[in-house]
Image (cartoon, rainbow, N blue to C red; front, side, top):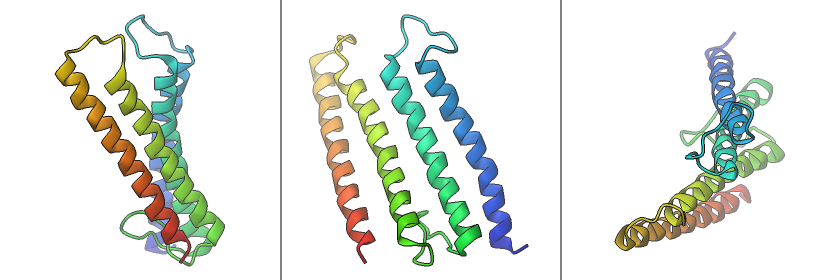
Amino acid sequence: MTPETKGNIIGLAFVAIIAAIGLYVVMTGLGRFGRSDGDAPSWVLIAAGSAFLLAASSMALSAIGGIVYGAKANPDGSLTDEAPYAVRALQILLSLGIVAMLVAVASWVALNPEEGSATGRRIALAAGAITVWAIFFGFAIWRLRGLRK
């Protein structure tokens, strides 16, 4: 067993832990583990848990790409060109899904009408949410352009 294969197998163990965390948060959002009145809305918990599940899927795809195709991960976690185009495209879409879920949660934090926070704080949080959405679209354009190479 090569060191890369051993590392990919260890990575799959971390995938299981991250997936379990995501599943727990999603199931909590669906009301399976009980919730209190002060909790965030269900969709926020489902989005946050989905970010974990998408991260676990992307990490698993990276590990499987290394085991099956011999593709090594770049420093940013993306697969090298040894992996098939479809696998690399799926990994990018999963990464975009992670960012989209986190941006949705951040937007809810910024624009939550029930919080009743001070106007200055709301303006700052809204500016942060707009900035994060701009980063999301910039990331999407950058990664999808890189996929065409």
